[in-house]
Structures are given as C-alpha cells and as structure tokens.
Image (cartoon, rainbow, N blue to C red; front, top):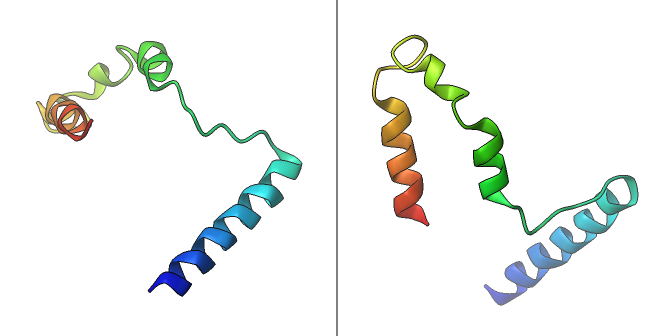
Length: 66
C-alpha cells in the first residue's frame, strides 16, 4: 500500500545520499552518447557469439519501449 511505497521511496533516497557521498550520481543519462560511442561495437558479434538478427531484434524492442 501507500506505507510500503513511502518506505521504499525513503530507502531509495537514503541509498542515493549514501552513494552520492562516494560518487557522482547521474540520473539524466544521455543515452544517445552511449549509442554513438558503442556504434558498430556489437555488430561484430552478430552471427558469431549471438544468433544472427538478435541485435536488430533487441534494438527494435528498445525502440518500441521508448
């Protein structure tokens, strides 16, 4: 219920504060910069380590989620 939700929110906030003491926490991630940096990295695995087409299928699912 509401009490559990509030408790989880409080624990989340306390966790962020604790982590923030030792590291910078980035909540607004620039996903596109990650994509640009990794562009082409995973294609080398398509049909080798991964089933051919799995990479594109995963990208399609990610696009649908956004």
